Length: 193
Image (spheres, rainbow, N blue to C red):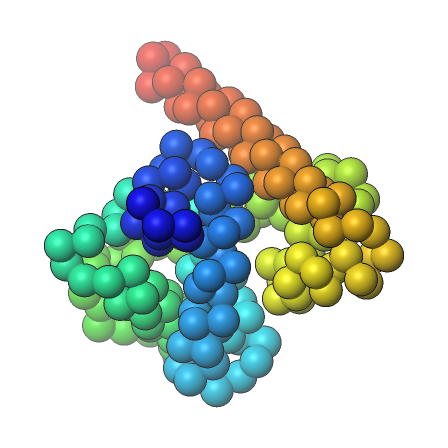
């Protein structure tokens, strides 16, 4: 395997390796952001779209199939799909009428609810992080800064920034796993009643 091999990084991400996710993100953030910017023609929307794509990569890395195309092609398709989903939701909100969809209305509603719940869980998990981890993650994933730029901004060594980001991602994953386990237990209990 060559260093930074995207397919190997995706396999590692599947097993929860946050360092692999970090490397994958570094490798492809500018590509995904530029693709999103071309589609949205708006920096803020492109940032949101880019964020959505990488959240999906983190949770669904196993959906990549090398037989169907390159990692860049897969990311471009994901970015375009998330863009189309956002446009559909916006149209439904603006016009108040159902729009023709490839998925069923129930599936679209489930996806919207799951996305909203995932965002709420993520937002809550981020709010519980130590301040330095929260700041480093925010600057990296929402401010699109490199680790070196964050180190300069925070006036800390690069190794410290890498650790803050790595531990921040581990803490987020741990918190989100606990929340999802509680939800599963609640669902199991409700279905057992």
